[in-house]
Length: 149
Length: 272
Image (cartoon, rainbow over all chains, first blue to last red; front, side, top):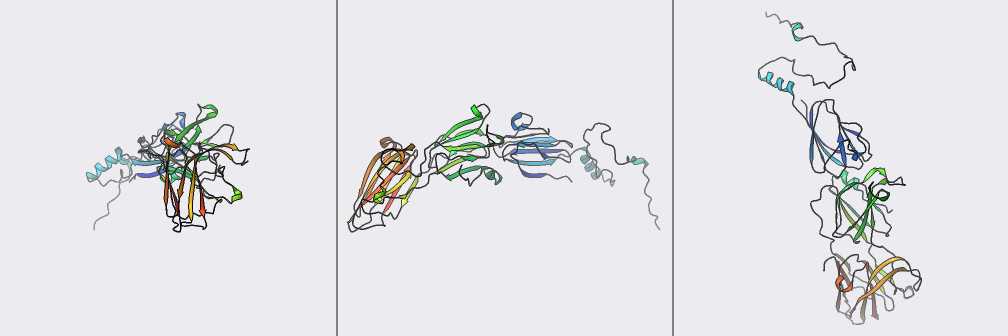
């Protein structure tokens, strides 16, 4: 079961872009700058300088919310030491809802226990598939029942 | 640059909402640094100096350095950036916020009347302190001004005339002082006289006698006389007497014995 993450992130005063959060699923990321800043965040990896406008400046005392899909990454940049409150919470998506419905219906099928996450958009042919394609459910061998004596 | 015991980035990491720069000042050339951005600055309650200059990086300013004055009752509101990944022009120093005193500081000042041949000595010369509060987050409000400060000397040591004892106290921007002396002698053989001077410092040293002393203008504000068993006091106000950098109190005693049981109390305030 995915869990929320809550912690305080301290920026480094180096003017270099750093990875703030790399989600493993679709999440709602809430950020609040607790100190003066300036601190900029973006899904772009090249953010500097801080005030260049390549990212979004966080506002002191205001919580700002971002939706990140799998494959998005959030970067951060600052020139001083600053405190950023970070709350990342997963967003329930269709397979999870379907699983909940099936459980309610009394299904014992394990097929939907671990639904595959939505894959990030990728260019065709860039990454080769490392595992064989799974056969469809209908073609799988049926498990035999034990004979009853 | 003095060794600074407090750093703003540590205040950030420790979760504070303010950073307090609170440290003794050795000279007017002292430069203090604030290495975290600020939402506002104000003079702290225990500041002895009344005016400071803030310098910070700004590309629109000449030499990329912007300067603003911070004084008692005049906070700076708005974000001031420290840019540690940027350097001040022609230096390799990171563009922190720099703080320097606007007031003149001379911790070696001696009044004109000070005479080493008479074995005069300085009984008390409190080190002036810089006290500036930097707000790391949005300020909810500001301190209304500096707190009153009391200098209390419970056992003053007095030599026999012509030896004099001096108390040299910071008075930057203050508008009121109350000086009170209590002579606890009961035998009636030791009378105190206190000459109070207002001193405004200036740069350079004197050529005329006493040569080599710091230049300063001195103004007599009043004289207290306290015979044995008597209390005397003096009130100084900005409206009536003016404003000064220092108060210099010269204490002499006429009599036959030494006394260490009398008290001197000075209260200085920004309010009249």
